[in-house]
Length: 292
Image (tube, rainbow, N blue to C red; front, side, top):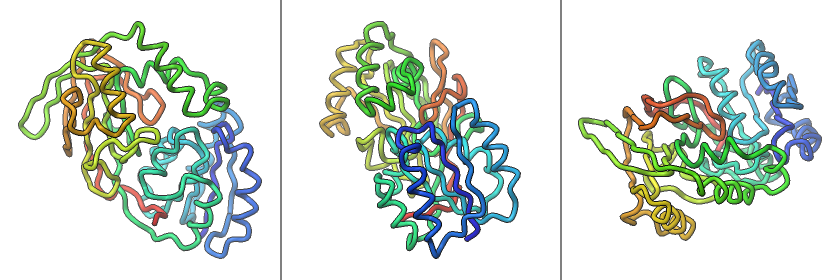
């Protein structure tokens, strides 16, 4: 396949593994690398995406990055349905790669690509913006806005925990109203997720969440104003015991309108891209993907 390798070297592991990835792919019998695009800084991402979009006659795009760059690439090429994607886990969390069932170690993923099947997977969409794994409101956004890329590179997943503890001290609960398929739900929460993929970080969200199921799942942790209820719900999540807890709300759906008081920013796989209110929906079989 005529393939472009797109690497965000600003991602946690990408700069270290960039040369190894190129070396392995140059030996590949499946991929003909016709172009390598490297993003050396966050300021250069848009320019690199424009370079990618100008390329014609390509069959495959291999993206080495974290979840945020995956979304950026998918939105840039959203009208080119014939492209096959492969995602190399080079970021901090790599939740979407984990959700597809592929290895979260870069070298293992590269080896799998050689014989991987081409499968169709679904994506979520928030106000017209595609997302691969998770859209979020509340605490996750506060954490993302107050954590630096340097901290993520140094501490990895622990950086999110440290930032979360700091932000919870002043975080106020939000009132959420969800209208979906003739039903209306209203509740308070500190932490709201819309899951397409199965994982939030390294933890499974719900058995109903899967990139292969053509549905989304709303997850609200701590459905009261209390920070203590929220902390208890997150503890249950860490222990894998949240799925039937009364402090956690799980709602599978295909399309919905979401209203938040007060109005809040919405994060998509680590990047703030829009604000509430939002229209959220599943996009079935949205892309072709190299996967097990």
